[in-house]
Amino acid sequence: MTSAYITTTIPYVNARPHLGFALELVQADVLAAEAAGVGVQEFVDANAAAFTGLAEPLSLSVDDLIRTSSDPRHRAGVERLWQACAASGDLYRKHYEGLYCVGCEQFCTTAELQDGRCRDHGTVPDLVSEQNWFFRLSRYAGQLRSLIDGGSIRVEPAERRNEILALIDGGLADFSVSRSAERARGWGIPVPGDPDQVIYVWWDALGNYLTALDYADDGENLSRWWTGASSRIHLLGKGVLRFHAVYWPAMLLSAGQAIPTDILVHGYLTENGRKISKSSGATVDPYDLTGRYGTDAVRWWLLREVPRGADADFTIDRLVGRANGELANGLGNLVNRVVTMIHRYRDGRVPVTTANAPDAAALDRAIRNAPGLIAGALEDFDFRRATEAVWQIAGEANRYVNRTRPWDLAKAGDRAELDAVLPAILVACQAIGAHLAPFLPDAAARITRQCAPGEAGLLPRPAPLLPRIAWPVLAAAPAQG
Ligand SMILES: [Zn+2]
Image (tube, rainbow, N blue to C red):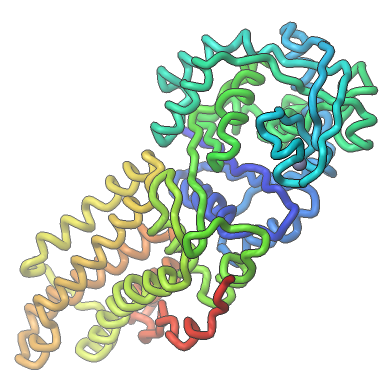
């Protein structure tokens, strides 16, 4: 059995989660739901309730969450990773001097400052001079380059791979992986054997991908989900690419562990053309959006409109437009129509026929092609193309209904033809229910239930599946300034 291990990044929990992080969660969820035997690990930092809580409004299938601050698996695992790299001779002490911003908790270069102050915090950084531990990244430059260039570590999309190759070609310097315990003010994991130093935050954070799998104890989860997995997939935003595509694989090579197979990089979301920030408020709060417009509408927008690996602009208009145009009018209406007709013309019983449905070649093709198209699109990390394949079935089925006009067949008493047409449309709806499951688990379950004959061979009475979002709600949505 092949298995894949899919991770999202650790969100910074300095604000409530916004739609950009919801995008990463939903993408990971689709990849996990689509493949059998997949484990999704969500890595969530301290003060994580708001993030953990997203599982329900977004209908996520979360297997595991790790809080780095409190999980005992974590510290022991980070220590083991450190010791493994030390045993390879890749950790050494070096005197270091630099400008350090306490707010950012990292060193900055003069070029990054504005009038000598941190751009984010407006404060003058401290001049810090101390002995730190360094990781021998330079040793792995050549190996990393060939792994990424040769596709052993697949970085998608290609422009991100090129960005990383250019970075490696520019030269990889060893990097600092610890800071003084005093400067860390008690936070962080002490360096094994050197308690005056704590392990730098990025080392610690990347270590999560292993420590959540009982790496500290060499547990069964490690061999099942990491060492023995056929894919080790990291989903992340472009802002943390260097850490995942350079530092992390180098640490793993040093520690003698398997490296990631796929690094899938998504872009950023803007809202009405503006960067989403802490002050963006309710229009990009996933809780508020799912509460107001429903989980299906929010997931559909994220999967249907965000281009592969690129930035996308979110507006309420686009969300509602997609939901009403495709989910309510396209899908919901289709299922409702066929179930209503089967009740009206056949007392709710699906006709049994040996006759081929007339004129159904295009519809059959859309149904037959969908699984291959979806799998290929997800292999390419292209959620728009994947949902398009499902949408194709709905489009063909709606055209088929309009072409065959079952209501005219019923009126004309053409029983044989009606009995061939109605099942063909129902089969299309059942296919939509099945293929939609990774993308819209809630809507898919409702469609599947609606289209499944019960014990007496009767379809459930037609119920609204994907209601239209009322436009007055739209008018009441807050405008963001
Ligand atoms: Zn700062």
